[in-house]
Structures are given as structure tokens and as C-alpha cells.
Amino acid sequence: MNYLLLSSFILSFGTTYLLTPLWIRAAAGAGIVGRDMNKYDKPEVAEIGGIPVVAGFMAGVLAYIAISTFYLHQSQTLIFILAAALTVLSITVIGLVDDILRWKIGLKQWQKPLLTLPAALPIMAVNAGQSTMALPIIGRADLGILYPLLVIPIGITGAANGFNMLAGYNGLEAGLGVIILSTLGLVSWKTGSTWVTMLAFSMVFALLAFLRYNWHPAKVFPGDTMTYAVGALIASVAIFGNMERIALILFTPYFVELILKGRSRFRAESFGKPREDQSIGKPYSTV
Image 1 (cartoon, rainbow, N blue to C red):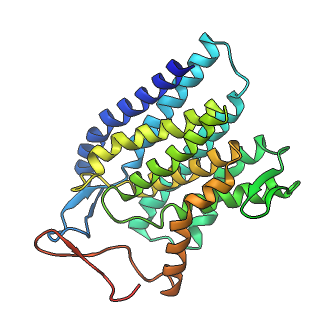
Image 2 (cartoon, one colour):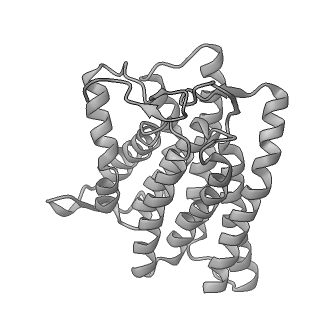
């Protein structure tokens, strides 16, 4: 089983590592670029880097499915893995549309949750009979039909859009994704849910490969294509592994960011003031 996981992780890393530079060149040639607002000279950087990340994630997941099904003859968790993959793919397409429309017309904040809501349908379907979840302070609670019909779509949509809030600095989004998913993956490994571990670490290794090109100075930006996918996967992993409480704790910085941006009526931006010596100053005098 360890070799099965390892093969998935290696394929995820290798696919993203090889595809990202190809995407950087293709994006630059097609004019899919944006300005790095945290650099003094505002260089143009390739956008929508989430495409090679999701491709790497899917390569690892499909390898796991193929080996489990055709070699090990294990298919008990196949429906759940496919549901998670479909959710990630669906929200990746939505993120891609968001990235493209943002250049054309710009999407309002209230429109984004509505766009991401349909991506929760696969997880809702396979979890229709599971209504128990772990909550902070309260502990385990049986929410009945409210769990698949209300909690799951709120969780998927909230995580996908919320994960995008802490963004703007080279390597920030991918780095936070590595931290959160690694934590959830290790917890699921300890509890024996190896297929949940596979989902988490397939994305972790894809993100690690992406960081090679997204680290300062970034050659590619992730875009909503990646942040939506990572956020939705975090929620999916938490739901399948019954780790909602841990996921909420890990999302504490995002709740703080929500409060801070709410104070400015979401007009504040997550950019610093770049200086000529390549350092970054504070954009605002107060928090």
C-alpha cells in the first residue's frame, strides 16, 4: 500500500513539474499574463498556473485508481475518490472561467460563491447518508438531512472562496495549501483512511512542484483556477476523513483575514508597497 501511495505522489509531482514550464511559455505566448504588484518594476508573469497543478493532482489520483482497481482489485472507496476528483475538476473549470471573466468584465464578490456552488454536488451525493460531523466545543453532532443538503455545499463553497483570501505574495497560496493538506493527510493516515491521505498528498506534491516556479521571484501565478481547486479539496478531505474540526482550526488565519477585510468593506488589497531595493513596505498604517 505504501508503494501505491508513493507512486501516486511521484506522478503528481513529476506531472506538475514538467507541465508548469510548458504552461508558462504557452501563457506568455498567448498573452495570459499579469503584473506582479509586489515587485518594484511590476514585471509580467504567466497567469492561471492552476492548470498544471490540477493536472498533476489528477495524474496521481488516476494512477491510484488504476493500480487499486486493476492490480490490487480494491474498489471499495472508488466512488468517494471519483466524487472528490469530480468536485476538484468542476471547480477548476469554474475557477478558469472566473480567471478569464475577471479580465473581461470582472466578477462581483457575491457572484463567486454562486458559481462554485454546483461543484459540491458530487460530495453531496455520496455523503447523503452520513450526517455526523465533529464541531468545535460541541463535539460530534448528528445534523440529519441538513448535513448533505446544507453543510457540505457551504463547506465546499466556503473553503474554495475562503482559500483565495490569503493571496497576493509569491508562493503564499501554494505554501498554505501544502501546510493545510499535509496536516489533514497525516491525520487521515493515522486514522487509517489511506485513500483520503492519497487525495491530500497528491495535491501536496503537485503544489510542491508548482512552488519551484511560484516561489519568489514567481514565474507563474496560480489564479482562482488553483485556489478554488485546493480550497475545495481541503473541504472534501475534511468531510471524507471526518476532520471538520481540524480543518476549521487550520482555517483560522482566513477567518481573521475575513474580519480584517470586512472592516474595510472588502476594499483593502493584499499587496505591499514594493521598494527599489526589492523589499516590501506596509500598504496601510494600521491593521
